[in-house]
Amino acid sequence: MSGAAVELNGVSKVFGTGDAKVDAVAPLDLMLKAGQTTALVGPSGCGKSTVLRMIAGLEDPTTGTVQIGTETPKALARRGAVSMAFQDPSLLPWRTLHSNIALGLKLARKPSNPDQVNALIDLVGLSGFGDRRPAELSGGMRQRAAIARCLISEPELVLLDEPFGAVDAITRNRLNLELPPLWRDRGTTAVLVTHSVQEAVLLSDRILVLSPRPAAVVADITVDQTTIPVPNTPDFQRVCDDVSDALGAVAA
Ligand SMILES: Nc1ncnc2c1ncn2[C@@H]1O[C@H](COP(=O)(O)OP(=O)(O)OP(=O)(O)O)[C@@H](O)[C@H]1O
Image 1 (cartoon, helix red, strand yellow):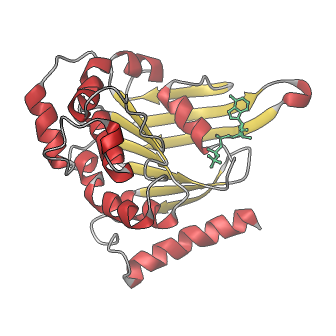
Image 2 (cartoon, protein in one colour):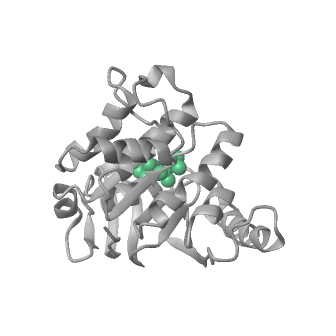
């Protein structure tokens, strides 16, 4: 299953009214190409997760429209063609790893397929752990399982909200290198929210730097994934510096 393009036209979000009013997202016009991974980075509380939730159809925009391929986010979700992963892997503690990942097929209303689940367990480096429960796994293993549950239904769009934010730095570096090819190689469109500049450069074809609330795009940086994402090289560092400079400018 290949990815779908994501288009935002004049999408804004205001929460609450009166004294409780929060302008979370300024009107955004964006076209995210099918099959690309786009990172949203920006200061804490600037509206990144709100943008992601509007793309997921979990939050309605105050103005504007979100279109995914030719569909609305809610229509895509109803077809089970969008998956999300969060910082908290939110696995069901009473289910085995295999059963947690299989749940991704059920949620997408797709037929069960134990062989496909086993193949993905192997791909995310969890061979032999299929019958374990989440409490028996490390944080990094749980996050691998959450990504596997996200990808098992072969969604057209994957939304990742700080997916590796809760694991230690060494594990995070490994996950950053090992897991993205699983959606990238399938041509899945992905939108990633992260606080890590390195992670954004490593994982993304495009990085959108957002201003403090209400979120507006202040820098749109292209990353050539065929050449740049080799950590600790001058090219990699140069893109990291571009993103950091843009972040520094909005924080100043
Ligand atoms: N359901 C809601 N009701 C009211 N305000 C909300 C709601 N959801 C988010 N907000 C507010 O909207 C703003 C943007 O929140 P959002 O979670 O999108 O930011 P973020 O950039 O993802 O933050 P962080 O990087 O800290 O996770 C914040 O001021 C937040 O308090």
